[in-house]
Image 1: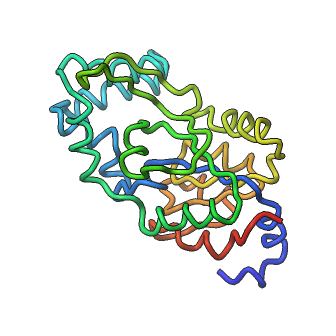
Image 2: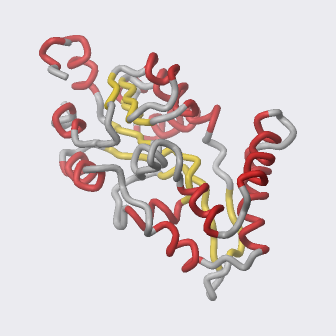
Length: 234
């Protein structure tokens, strides 16, 4: 994309001071949705596809809340005796999206505020992006006891339909307007946040609504183009 052909878009990019990222499919390569972090962990620990689909159907039909969904998923792992090291063994088989670590480091060095709003799990981000610059990170969190066993967990209130609220909260705390924010995501639960942000970017979009609503679509699972578009806050 040659931005000199899109002066209005370049003007919007120049206003951005805060970039907010989804995780699975955006920062962590989920291979087109076939191997996101949750699914990889479930498969590794023997949770069947039928079980996963049943719980998802209960959520999307309104029979359970998002927090209930997280409780059922992580509670199952706890009952199976899954440990932090067990989870790390699975997570370390995944990879960041191409050029993501380098791109994130460059954007942080250029002075952008970077944040995360995701329905993924904090351990995945910590394992694949150690010493990351994201602040805040709105994500599902799992707490382990001294022996590495799952002790308890906290479901994020900002996934699916509520990522826009998370973006509004982050922007307010950072003292920037939504027009000074960019949101980068890949799926249907990113649409509202992409629409609310000054700049919406889709990475290998899995959702027609997201592709339609974003300002820029990166067709490949790669974050390198961000380095050219975001040269530093004005």
